[in-house]
Length: 403
Image 1 (cartoon, rainbow, N blue to C red):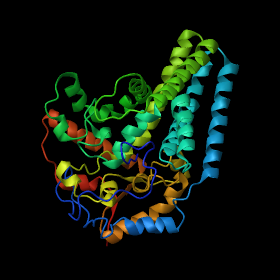
Image 2: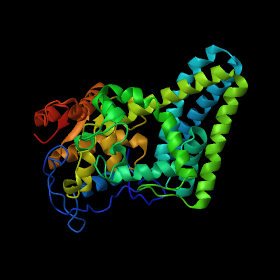
Image 3: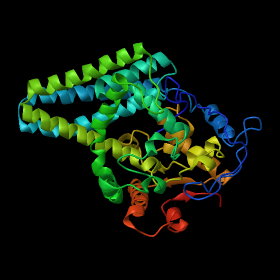
Image 4: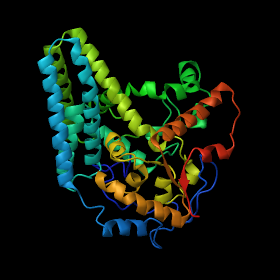
């Protein structure tokens, strides 16, 4: 998922990136230092990305698809209403539990819509985009859009950067060997076995997103995060409380307390798993720039080398919310979701001309690569051999380069 300045009110709403901070130097080094990519010229001399951006604009790929999104939002809301109606009609019965499955799938669609609204993919009107994101994120999901935008902005600005990307910051899981060193106790055990635990732990993600959002809105800011003005926090807080109140009222008035608890747990766990399945293939196991090499990468290298695109058809696009075109999304954060598939051949051909590896793989293989990387990082604490052959990393990818 994709970012710009951490102070922006919406997530990377513009297709044109800031000039690369490192000038002309080409990336060099290992997996954590970068191995690929040709020279990236600065803004004065033009960049490797500029011709691609110009082509995308000329072909209308950055133009909004408001009608398409209106249909997607309408269908999703009607489907959500149908599931709620089903819960009402079934009433206090254990037969209501199967409805948690479509509700989780539709909740993930809701998250994808909120994500796209934050990136200004739906509309260029920031106020309208914020309303759409608040409605889908805060009210329907119980997730703070301000917290998400801040975190996601920093991820997009420096994807997979070991020090700057919050998505790879060491926590329950770690994604860098440097972060694995010295972990003991429960955290050490989790790191040693994190490849096996990755997807089971994602079942907690739906709940964690709510907890982080509430902490962001109702507590003092910590770390690198920014905070919305008081008026924005008031609106966010009110919508978050409304979500919890509505969710609990729906379940507790229609079901027995035990049934309500089982339904809520199943719904939230399946939602977390769905989001984890959608997000895990995007960056795990790709290049991880360190503080030195990362500054030398231009916008195109920074986004392409750290991301992978997932092959598939309409079903894959729907199930993963368009995030399977992760390279294209990172290069063009404001590009509407239905245009990402159209942009892919342009991006792939442009990377081939520049000699920049474009990583594209199948969905199952992407999980194999991600889990392989997690296992390799955890191997630091299992006493396994250090510094596996670089060919192992290369074999994890289906890469298209210049002939």
